[in-house]
Image (cartoon, rainbow, N blue to C red; front, side):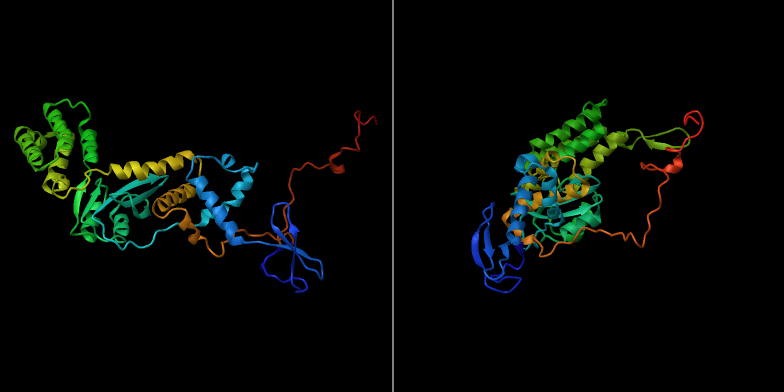
Length: 369
């Protein structure tokens, strides 16, 4: 029997134990010379560490449960690592003030995961929410010291949260997302000359590298307004309702004009920061998608935990995960049913045989009577 206390004394009579060979698995066996009770010493902490390490190598790797272990039953493996899903990885408080911070959101199931990293993709913090909102962004930004520059994609609620939490921080809008928004309004093949000119102007954002090219781009935007600005003010009516005649063109123009007026397009020209959130999209978000794609079929709760473990391992590594192992794990909720107090109802149909069904006593021609 296993010696739960790992003591050097017998649990039966209290005598000192002596070595008595090894088990087939190679574990040292101990025996009491007085009563003959045999036991082995178990290190539950080491077993937990090994199981957690095996779980993380499988979760963050590309192998299945069967490929990762020699145990023939996948059900046995899932039972051994079931307790690992209860651990909630979390990073410590952010104490260092960074120069640049990149933020973005990724949707996992019905949840949205907000992530903040540095320009070197060092994970600072994350926040779960139902959707991008000012309250969700505020909960994330409050845990990070205000940086000099923040790069974002213009998600809903971020501007108001940044003004409240980081009032002195410069904002750089991701130029790639700006171009995607313009493309969504104008399509790839605008029908009007004004739409084609505005689409070409949005594509020219990628060629801005210095102050002179930024000034030239703004002059081009003003020239477009002088030539085609009247189209954004035209309205149509059917006698009862009124609407903007060139609604999509108006939305694209207002987007570029507002970003240019707020000085959030060319922050990188003066401060030398990154101008897109592509490092975060390709390095962090894409890594999370790869993990979920490799282990597709997980429940939503397990998908959230997998994303958290991916972010945690990027920052601290697997070796630091051992510190998160709780001393006692919460048991699985189970409500036992007392058969004496709760009598089970008798089923209307069953598989048993009964004489009252006429199986043995038959009358008439079938019973030859």
